[in-house]
Length: 155
Image (cartoon, rainbow, N blue to C red; front, top):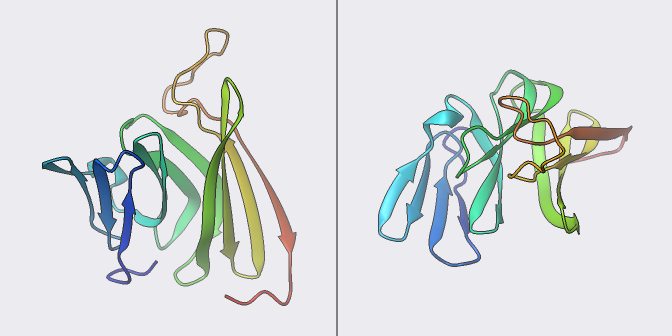
């Protein structure tokens, strides 16, 4: 997404929340109130995915060392994927969230940066399990990524 580019609009499954973003300004209608997200700071929203009456945001700056996954309801949640990002070379194609089992929720994001495609996967459980140690700011998530080079990728 470019500054001032297309507008992202996502509606929560319960139909009570709607998020609007033009990349640099972000608002959420929550029933009859309007919220913004100051914890995004100067990052741009690249993609939004709804999960359980809230949203996960795929964000980065024009020039950045990583892609951050943030959550609209939990300001402490932050998953980072290390990437070298420059203006115009990044495109987030899609994201999906699914239950792996009773205790594990996974988010996958397909991103193109330059000539490389990345399928990033992370655990996005918002509540830590009793046996897990939670690091401050970790978002209770562990991430791993896979990349494959494709010379004929267009976007």
